[in-house]
Length: 225
Image 1 (tube, helix red, strand yellow):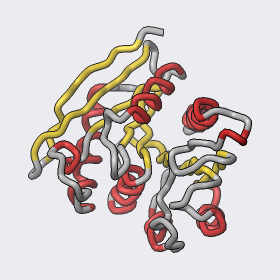
Image 2 (cartoon, rainbow, N blue to C red):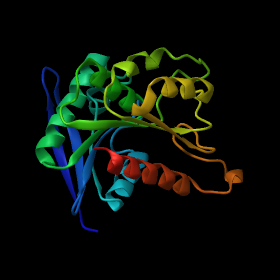
Image 3 (spheres, rainbow, N blue to C red):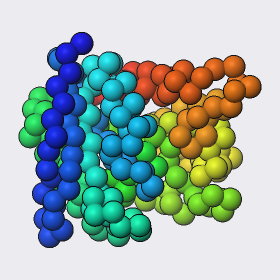
Image 4 (cartoon, rainbow, N blue to C red):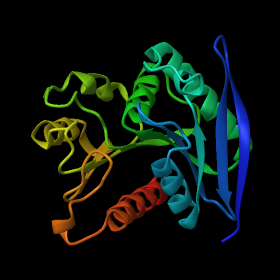
């Protein structure tokens, strides 16, 4: 499959400019606005594999750095800055991928910031949110406070979660998702950690676990109206 990759600059009102990458396979049927996690930027190997895997499945991706990652600051941006960056990314993806279905979300911190932004004011044109490991709480600090805004999200949500994820106790996450009703779907990756890596004794590889993640995501996107 032919895939076009473009390096871009994304302007964020009142903040500055960050780098972005648009990867579009031929005849893309959707675009996933893919925000990175707190500790690794858009060029991390895991982000590359996700983008390439989705391209193989006919789905474009728009990746971008948050400002703190662009300037190599240690601490993640304040939510207001992260939300503005996500809105700028959605606007640019809409411009660059006209006529295709838009989905937003991403890994960990990026997914949570996307859901917060959506809960405050709908991201224009976005049909659903997909979380690649929703960080329900800090490591070894079970809580559901980070999920309180999710009931204000009106679009469908997909939670892709490893059963060994230290940032999402499934005993807490399952009832959170259930309480969101029909708009929320939880898909558990058996044996996966926060990055969907599995133990050797599981009998399958990390690549196989990631394929399950991406197959599930692609199928869910196709089902969105």
